[in-house]
Every structure is written in C-alpha cells, then in structure tokens.
Image (tube, rainbow, N blue to C red; front, side, top):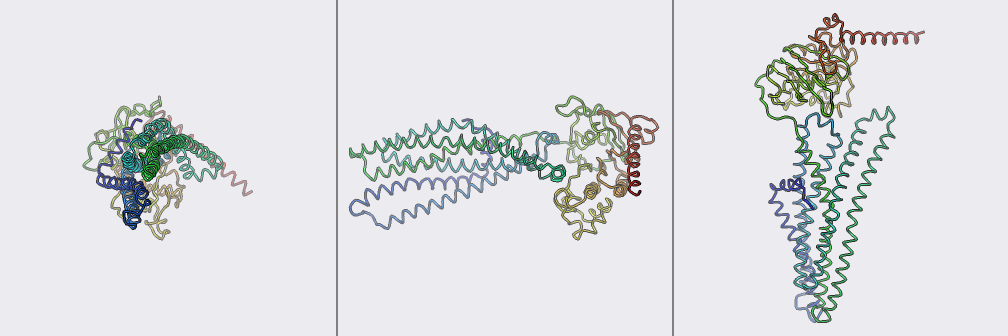
Length: 592
C-alpha cells in the first residue's frame, strides 16, 4: 500500500501540536499497558487464589480491578480529548486555507467547478481527513501498543502457543492489502457523487422561484433521487468490500484459537502449563482480537481519508490569481488605454476580443453596445484583472495593469453588475462592504444618492436593518439601487456599470440615472446597456461585434453615419413603438 504524498503533508501539519500529541500517545500507552494486567490477574487468582488459602489479602483484588479501570478510564479520556483538540485545530486550519484559496481563484475556476463541489470539499471532505487522522492515531497507536503488550505477555506465558497466534498477523496484512486499492477508488467515486448531491441541494435551495413557477418539483425530486441512489450504491459497495474482511478475519482467528486449545490441552497433559496459565493465555489471546480487528478496520477510514486528502490538497494547490505587482501611491486619474487587446476563453477557438484598440481619457464615459456575445462583458471584466489578456495590454495612467497589484488596481474601481450580489447582513454592511471602519453618514449619503432615502424612513432600524439572503427582503429595484449605493460609497475613480439600471422601473431608472450622472462627473465610466436610450449621453459609444470594434463615436455621430449602431437603434425603437402600440390597442379594446 503506497502512502499518498498528501497524507505525508497532512502529518506535517501536526508538527506545531507535537507536545499535545506526545501527551495523547502517552495516555494511549497507559491504556495499552493496562490490557495485559487483566489476564495476569486471572492467572494469579486461579493458581494462587482458588488453590488452598490465598497468599494475599482478598481486599487487594477489588482494589486492583477498580484501580486498573480507573487508570484506564482517565487515560482513555485524556487521549480522546487531546486527539480531538489537535484534529479540530487541523480541521480549522485546512478549512481556512481552502477558503482563502477559494477567494483567490480566478473567475475561470468557477466556470469549470460547481458551487456544490466547493462546498462539499470545504465542509465534508476536510471532515473525512480529520476523522481519518483521529481513527488512525487512536487505532494504530493504542491498538498497536495493546497488541505489543499482550504479545509480550503471551510470549512470557508460552512462546510455543504464541507462535501459532503470530501466524494471524501476516494473514491479516494480506487481507488488508487486497482491499486497499479497491476501497480508495470507491471512496474517490463516492466523494464525486457526494459533491453532485450537494450541488443539487444548493441549486434547488437557490432556485425556489424558478422551480415553483415552472413546475420543476418532480424534476428536482428525480434528480435528487438519482444522485442519492448513486451515493447509496457506492456506500453499499464500500461496505461490501470492507465488511468482506470481517468473516475472513474471524475464520482465521477461530482456526488459531482452535489450534491453541488443542496444543494447550496436550501441554497440560504433559504438565507444561497450569490451569491459571491456560486461562490467562486464552484471555490474553481473545483480548488480542479486538485491537487486531481495530487495526484491520483502520483500512476503511484510511482509504476514505486519503481520497479526501487528495481532493482537498489538489484544490489548495490549484493556481490562483496573479500575485505581486506595484502598489499605486495615489488615486488614479482614470485614463485607460486598450492596446491591441486580445482574449480567448479556454477550449474555444474564436477570440472573445480580437485586437481591440481604444484610448479613454480621464473622466470620459464610454458605452459598449452590440448584440449578445459581442465581447462587452469580457472587455469590462478585463479592466479589474478578472481575466488576463491573451495578447496586448491595458494601461492605467500609462502603466500596464499587469504591473500593478490586483488589490491596488481594484481599489481604483467600483462595479455594478446586472447580477446583483448582496450579503446576508445589514444595509450598512452591504453599502460599506470592504470598509473595515464604515462611516454611517457616508452610507446614508450614498443611499440618498441612490434614491433609497424613502426606504430608510420606512425601516424602523434604518441602515441597521437585515436584508436577508442576497437581499431577499428587498424588491428587485431596491436591490439594484443598494448595489449602486455600494459603488457610490466606494468613490472610486473608475466605474463599471454592467446593465446597472436593468431591474428598475421607469421612474426609479430616471432617479437613479440622475444619481449616476452626478456620480460619473470626474470619473472614468464604462457602461454596458442593451437599452440604447441609457447610453445616448455617453462621451463615446463603442459598438462591438464578434469581439471587434466596428464603430466608435457619439450618439449623434453614429446615427448620422447610419452604420451598425444606427441599425441597432432604429431596430430597438421600432420594436418599442410596436410594443407601445399593441398596449394602447389592448387598453382601448378593454375600455370599449
């Protein structure tokens, strides 16, 4: 059985806690040392206590028995407590490393790894590792010491019979080796299926509205049943593989006991063994079966833990976003230059951005428009360094952003996405997110600028009101405005607005747009909007198609050019006119 390098790595994490581990091992040794005392007491009682007058005080018997089990109880408690203390520290340490790593993964990681898989790794696979360590240390150390102590006593009593007992050990090793490889493979598959089940639960919890409105309850039940049944099957296969060793072990043990009894009877007839010695030997031998069984059963949690360790450390070792770079010493002016910028998603042949060149002055508002898939979101996601250019570069105030640390670069940028993300905390927590010392007055000013002051008046706890999971206690428009307030609070020189007003009604949109207009003053702003009416006042409009810049100009210039933008504009507003006409005709029919 080969030991995984990840397992060795895990053992090294126990080094800072070696004093407590040594104390735990000492307690285990004390527990193991009490085992041979029991068969010794039987020998003394049978050979000297029941033959004639006892040569010792009768009160020594209960004192010795009670004393042994008191010592055993204290040492067992001590070893269990110390081992749990150490393993829970390791558990928290590994989880902290995984969580920190997760925060540093590039966005591409989350396009290939499900949320369920990440949650399963942090919550359950790490637990499997610590369970393995606890079982291994407890079983191997305590059980091995117990086996050694009992074997020493057996050798002292009768070395010939002990040789028969020792035949068990290589046979047990063969059985364990035969099942190890299969168990590890089954455990790896079980972890994968468990992650799939976690993903189903996570998605079903998050998508309750979609499930209910589209009648997906049965589909989700079937999907859950399928994953759950797969997990059950793997569990049964692991149980079958692991449990098959038990009857084999018991058969070998029974054979050894039978041979020992026959040989002991022969020795007894020749006067080579006393009744007390025989009972003591059989007692010690039977007591030996329990630690041997525990050592054999270590293989199951060992293989589960090693499979979990591989998954956990592979996740920890995954590449993160780039590190290093210079720290900006002052607030950026906001001038950005996109120089021959190209980007290609992994496993895709076509470029998402194809030699984009654009120079943006400080304080300028640039709107990106075009059909879906044109590269608008990809481009704005490259500005904060979410994606790295395949070729070309982006310059901030003349400096390549690749030379700037990501923390420093992103401190210059505020972003409002069409997919609003809020946290299960208070309004203040969400608006001042990332600020270690939030300013309540600044938060209120940002809320007022985002036209949420009326909402604040309605809430008895004001900015200290809890908003629920992803702002579930707020309306869609209120959630969007809260995200805008967060961007206003940050007061960064560069703004990225990706459909920032998409969830607002007409009246709210006008109010928020007015707030955004004030906010954009003196700041470099990148706007993505499918509703062209929201970008008419932009300094320049950039039309993207298939990752290429096809037109650049002001709203009026592009309309006069009568190119791609003009076609999009006229198409959108003709559709809008048709929709408004249909609504008017419907209202007229209802009145008639």
